[in-house]
Every structure is written in structure tokens, then in C-alpha cells.
Length: 330
Image (cartoon, rainbow, N blue to C red; front, side, top):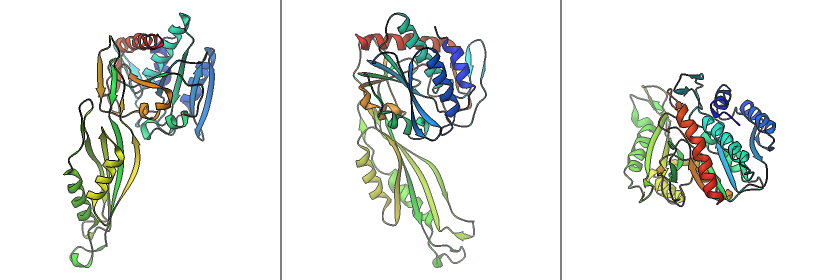
């Protein structure tokens, strides 16, 4: 049997920010091969592979990501907690999934697949590439921190770059130039005034103006400025993009950076369910069948300097993955 705490230690001691996942993929591929799985490595980019491990043709596939956000946080632990980058999002979850698959296998169930992707934190290129893999199952359980509650809905996410172009001039003679920053701020004000869609299950679309750049110096009329806008969405993203583009107005350009769609899943008997505001690769993996999202840990410490997961919750996560897989197999 696999000890998920020990496997989490091993995985979290291998830095794997998005784009630099080769070492952790090599490690996981080796471990799964040692366990007797047929392991397929699908290249996404040089040095970056998706892993797919099966015994027999799967009905249920466990999936999560092996990349993490920077900066690296050194792994450490105490009696109660595992601390460090990836403990919660999502290497601890990957370890729990391997442990769950092995527990099911020990009970005679060989129809479980394991799909581990790269690039989830930067747009999901690994998950999108993974859709070429076969054989697929009928159900996919995507691992993200949901506090071991079954997520039956998640918001989507879409990010845009808004770009304004002006004309540089001496700030004492503003009539000789044109301020890109003024145009950008006016456009952001119009965009923020838009009434955003709501959904009875998923809630309200939200906007974060996450980054603003521009200008040369305090005494120069700024010739260029840009902002990065990120929406957490509950409806059609193409319609939202058209509204944002119209609100930006003439003279500004809007470029879509990436997007994840929103997801709904049918409820299951006996589960404490939730919906989540974050986006994940589940939106990219719809060809793998009916999708659910589940995992130990809380998203509220993911991506932070205090990322951690309680050991007891990680072990409970193994139980929950086994329980959900058995229910779907029935």
C-alpha cells in the first residue's frame, strides 16, 4: 500500500513551478511504473509531459496537476501538518489519489486510471493536450482542495489584457501629447460599471483588475499603458468578452490571455456538496466523461506563503476518493 504522507513528502521536495515540471513528472512516472501501471507520457512541450497510468481499461479516472505556483516554499512538517508549496495544491492530492487507486486495486478493482497533468496554474495546456489520450473512462474525479466536500459546480475564469496607446510629450505641455494612462483609467471605470451575470448555483461573476502598468516618468505624458483583467465567470465567456470590448471603447485593444469554462456536475446521494469560486482543469477535461471535483485541504491557503495541509485531512481524502470511485463504479 502507498503511504500518502510519505509520497507527499517526496513530491513536495521536488520544485515544479509551471513550465519546469520535468523532474516531478519523471519521479511520478517512475513510481507508477514500479507499482505495475502501464504509463503513457504525452509531450506537451519540450521537457513537459502529461502522465496517464492504467491497469485495465478505466471507468473512473483520478486527475490532478503536478505544477505549482512560485515561489518555492521549502517542505517541512510537524505532528499535525505538512507545510510547503504543493502540499495542498495539489501534490498532496496527487499522493492521495495514488493511495486511493492502490487501495481499490488491493480490493480487486483495476478499472481506475491516474492522469497527472502540467500547466494547470498557467492556463491548462497539459489538460488540453491530455484529451488526445485513450482509453478514457466514463467519470473523471478532478483533484483540487475542497475540504473533502464534493464540488458540483465551479466558476470559470477568463483573463484579458487591456492596452491603451498614447503619445509621449513633456508633462508641462500636455496638449502636445496624449495620455495612455488617462484612456486606460477611463476604460477601466466603464468596464467596472458593467452589470455582471449571476447564476443561482454558482453565484455572481466577479472582476479583479490584477495588474496595471504604464508610463515612463512623472514628467512624461505616458505613451502606453496596460491592465490585466481577470473574471470569475458563471456564464458564456464570448458574450462577456463582447461587452468588455465594447465598454473599453475605441482606441483601446483587448486581448484574451486564457480561459477556463464554468462547470456543473450532477449531485450524488450521501455527499456533503459545495460549489467553488476557483477555476480548474476540470473545465478542459470534459471529453473524459461526467466530472466531479474533490480533494483534501482548503483553497484559501493555496498560492500563499502559508500553504499547508493537515495530515489527518490528507488521510481522510484517500477515504473520500475511494468512496466516490466505488459509488461511480456502481
